[in-house]
Image 1 (cartoon, rainbow, N blue to C red):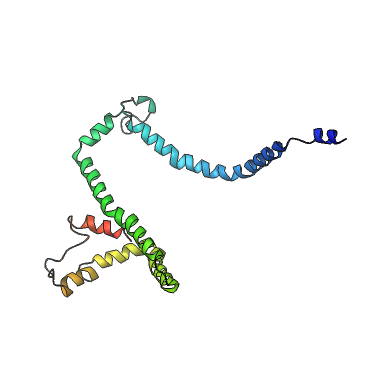
Image 2: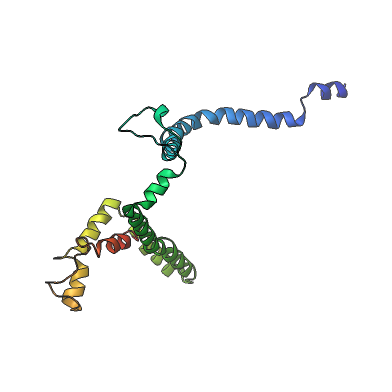
Length: 192
């Protein structure tokens, strides 16, 4: 009798496989729209641009994919010969060198120092003070930085001209209007 009941029961591994299959069947329909949008709006354009970069495809002359010929790295070699592309890559490298310490290293050091504060009330106050800038909306941050970089009413120029006397009104820095200072000003603004 007991052997007949044991023979009628499915094996123990069957239940685990069945649970996994039903769980997958219940959750998969929720993933389909996200996968559709990921493939359609993220993966496909990246793959298409990569394919175009290795071919002689031209939108202006002939937009049919059949007219494109596989030319491997020729487009990349031509792009790197252009001094404007090299200048752009150099500026991107400088921007990254300025941007990276403020976005990775400075917060990491601040977090370690904040973790070492023994007094819980002081640590909570520091955390709150450091969290406030993250709560300010992005467009408002840009307006704030434009004001801070302003020639006439900006606090940065006020300190440099009126308080410290490093510059006078005639030669004060135009942070967002000069080719020499705009790049640095935007990189430092990104630290926010």
